[in-house]
Image (cartoon, rainbow, N blue to C red; front, side, top):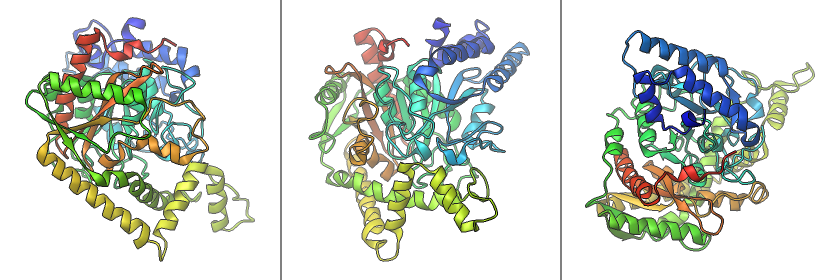
Amino acid sequence: MSDIIKLTAAEIAEKIASGELTAVEVTEAHLARIEAVDEKVHAFLHVDREGALAQARAVDAKRERGEKLGPLAGVPLALKDIFTTEGVPTTVGSKILEGWIPPYDATVTKRLKDADVVILGKTNMDEFAMGSSTENSAYGPTGNPWDLTRIPGGSGGGSSAALAAFQAPLAIGTDTGGSIRQPAAVTGTVGVKPTYGGVSRYGMVAFSSSLDQGGPCARTVLDAALLHEVIAGHDPMDSTSIDAPVPAVVEAARNGSVQGMRVGVVKQFRGEGYQAGVVQRFDESVELLKELGAEIVELDCPSFDLALSAYYLIAPSECSSNLARFDGLRYGLRTGDDGTHSAEEVTSLTREAGFGPEVKRRVMLGTYALSSGYYDAYYGSAQKVRTLIKQEFERAFEQVDVIVSPTTPTTAFPIGERADDPMAMYLADLCTIPTNLAGNAAMSLPCGLAPEDNLPVGLQIIAPAMKDDRLYKVGAAVEAAFVEKWGHPLIEEAPSL
């Protein structure tokens, strides 16, 4: 089992295609790993053992018939519990959808199944993707496999923890303000936020519709690229889906290079609040990029300092609208329906019982920002800042091919440390939020361990919209340089559970 779970997704797919391993063997090894360690990690909310083994048997049957297998056929995956999955519970980390079983698949789920990827189950997350630590899950927090007393990031901490704990070689996350990249950074894994509209949102439970984006999570850049190619592409079921070819991300990952590229460093992405070890590892990464042949360009983007404030008006405003559908009348939890309460009272009682504190906080903030007399002062102003940020990115990309920064200002913080301080929690997304506001593509990959706590640090790479391949070209070059320097991927240093 230990040999199988340490393989990359690309290696697993190759061994299944050649007959060296069966998909059932691979699936059983990962299910056994989940059974052995998930009581400590709590990465999964639901493990679909029977469904996963059925998918694996189907892959083996295809191979025995001589049918051509896809590039990820038989590879296990952990799916964030925000994507509807037919016949499998989808809770979005909330009590308001506890036990809800969707009658249909999200587009991402369907594409995974069509590619013969084996879905192991659904992973834990901050309720409705609102959080940076997975502590806001109604089903309890997830631990970081590097140190179980620390957070695995959020909102997709279950997916990142599953990778770091070797419970799955692949995972899917969603990124509204950094919820793929920040968990990747603090768990020493790879996470990618594709260009907005590059991956369908159909069947992905909405938090903030103009910001939400599903994307791949993995332990290597190539694995992330292979998964990206499976889930990306136009979807007529999603009106915001981009009708254009998917960038050549796999080719870029196989031919990583930064020779002759211009790499931007934004001065706003450092300073007060940044952990010394994070800055040290980032500076070393910039020097590494120079050694690999990149030209470093200093950038000044003053509007980025306003990104956090703008985001925490836009995202709550959109969530207050999206979550209005959870009324206790159509699906999910229903409280107070005993014949003595009106429909309005049932809705109020259901939301009181079903929504957690962070969701209530954001709904109230968003409703206030959209209310009569405050719309222009708050939501309208935030959208103007968003336009400024997008324009600054456009000017920056006239000078550089990609931008790099720390993914998050600190390493993983202890569970509970910021639970009563929302502002401190929100600062975890300081470096990631501007990209969501602009709709660009971005990646986080490991760039070492912080010397003061021996925990992973993430390097963020940002590319223009629909230039996702640049992420993989630069990411693969940096990853290869790290492997050559230290002899193995950083994830191998994660403590065994």
